[in-house]
Length: 260
Image 1 (cartoon, helix red, strand yellow):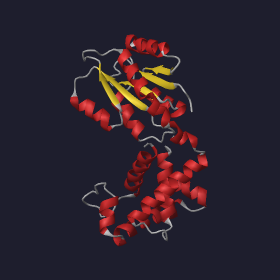
Image 2: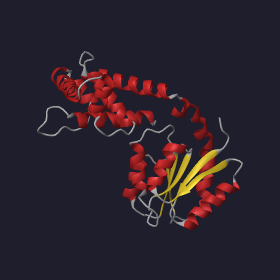
Image 3: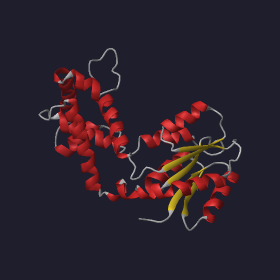
């Protein structure tokens, strides 16, 4: 297990960024600067490829590109090898923004306008929680091989479908599992076409099998299980979800499970 905490700074104010960098460098025996960025899109790509232990995120990237809340939202819908510990820094006095950030996965928040705030207080906070962050690293998905990760995802989806009442006898059962995993991996194209190419089936055949598996579930499964395990709201004119609605719902459940 590493004895240093890799920290990414996402801050568009150069003075604030420089001050945070200076504090991190002053604790170089325990902290390591992973990077300093101004763009939320660049930060998302960096987090996915470099897996920093912690992120110090400015919510208002007015002089950079993007938005802190947008980054938090995208991280919620991304499979990560390790969920970083996220500290939010903000000049905003909005309670709504603060609560939204927490709901979207921020672990802690500092208001820059509050008395006693300084970049040093942010870094000191990181040092306090550092043992717990590094202690969780041994359980991170980064320790899994690609095959182990795929099996972990498949086991979870099969368990979810079994609880819901999707019959394994339906050909669409495995197609839906594949589609959810593909969606979680960022493949947002035509799942039926990709599955068909992999299995040697026609695209229409795969689509119809997935539709039938969903329809059959809503027709024959225990209504209590449907209400308990599928909590997305159906449109008033529909008795069961579409393939897209079904896959996106379970995509998010899968990502939430992996990012715990």
